[in-house]
Every structure is written in structure tokens, then in C-alpha cells.
Image (cartoon, rainbow over all chains, first blue to last red; front, top):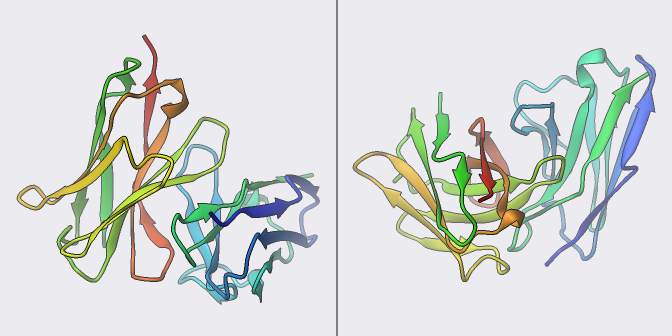
Length: 107
Length: 119
């Protein structure tokens, strides 16, 4: 089973600042790494697929990078509506796995 | 536009069987272009993939749940079903159904349904 480790677990950031979340895979997963946003009481929503491809309708302030074992989600110019938990997710091999999540709070 | 809606009992007793259904509207569960899956999330915790089905192609389960889980399709009702036997408190979670294309992430999710295992 591929383990995804996110860091940090929690981040408190002021509006308009930049947030960076990393996801490290326990083995090479190529570009099969995706990022989700989940707000309290809601289901996850896809932000970034295959490391760096923005999903339809996602604001341009969200971007992803990385391949192999190290990946990054960046949120530029943080807005109040971005307060949420962010998860990385791999579809390289079964069982599909998720990172433990990073909670982003707006200061 | 695809919509997914999970339903089922919100409370299940320990050692009993958890049964959930997911009703799809806007697409057919038998559409062979997609995988249909179940993912769960214990309260305040992360996401765990349970299993998925590719209509006409097979089912896939998390190894830790394989002995207890069944995912199947009722094509007459356009429903995806989940059955999890011998539940314990550790199975308490919000259960989501979702759809994805092959080799792609789940991009359509239901709203989720909370199942509590308790006597």
C-alpha cells in the first residue's frame, strides 16, 4: 500500500498570503497524484489532477507541481473561502490511498 | 449533470451488516466508461477508499476490508450498493459514493451519509 504523508497537518495563514502543502509518497507514483479540498460538512472537491492539471472551474490561485514521490499544492493570494482541509490522493496502484489531510485556517 | 445520493440506515448494531445504496441520476451505473466507488471518512479523520466496480469489468476492494465488503450494481434501479458485514465501532464513518474515469481521480461525489455503529 502506498502511504501519502502530508505536511503540515495544520496551517494558519493570513488572507492574501501564500499556502504551500506538500505530499510525499512512499514510492514512485509518477504523476498519479491529485488534490482535493473539503469544507466542513461537505464532500471532497477535486482541485488538481495528475500533479499539476487544474480541474474544470477551479480558481487559478490553486496550482500543483511535482512527480515521482514529492508533490506540492500552492494556494496563492489566500481567500476566506479557502478555509478547508486539503487531501492528496494517489491512483497509481490499488488500494487507492489518501494523505491524512492539511487543515488551512485563515488568520 | 451527474448527481449521486447515498442512503441507508444511520445506525447499525455491532456484528450486523451495513447496507447502503447510491442512486445515480444523469448517468447510467452501467456506463462502462467509468468506475463507481465507495469511500469513507470516520468523524474528524481522513478518507479511506473501500472499493469500486467497473461494470462488466470487475470489482476491486481494499485489502483490509476484502473479507467483509461487497460492492455491486442494481442496473434496474441505476443504483450502486455497498454491503459491509460484521461491523464494529471502527466502521463508524461518513460513507461517500463517487465516480471516476479509468486512471483518473474521483470527480463526482455524493453528499455522504453518516453511519454509526453502536448498540
